[in-house]
Length: 159
Ligand SMILES: [Zn+2]
Image (cartoon, rainbow, N blue to C red; front, side, top):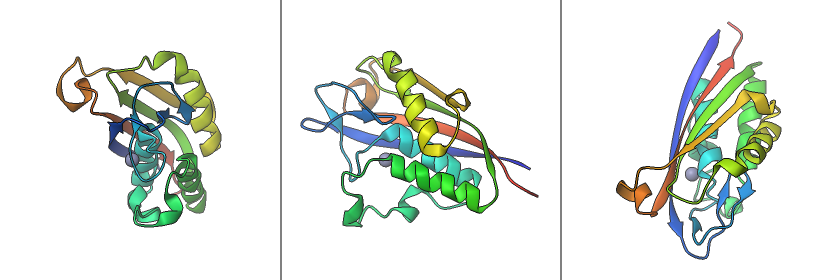
């Protein structure tokens, strides 16, 4: 059977933090704040996969209260999501994600993000969709206070 899952995440932008999106460090005056490396894109994808599996969210696997995840690279969360797919004898069909960020320009980094995400999931880059849009200067994203990401994942599971 085919299953789908939905993920959403948001992080604040702070000075003095590196900006890491899809595992790519992008030069910018602010970076995403959070307990791990705050890779909002990978977190949304992770929750979409866990959702398709009928599991809890990323926080139930990696509690933010646990100091071992401080500044952790978010690919480990995707690797865990991939191992959960394997545990259920599933097969990832595709992931599609949308990053909402006012700045900087994301498009030049999308091929590297796809490669990073595919490699963490044991998938092919062509099965990972990444798009980015601005919020047309409106709201917290538009003011550069944070970034958000939405993702869906489709997984084939045995009946
Ligand atoms: Zn997050």
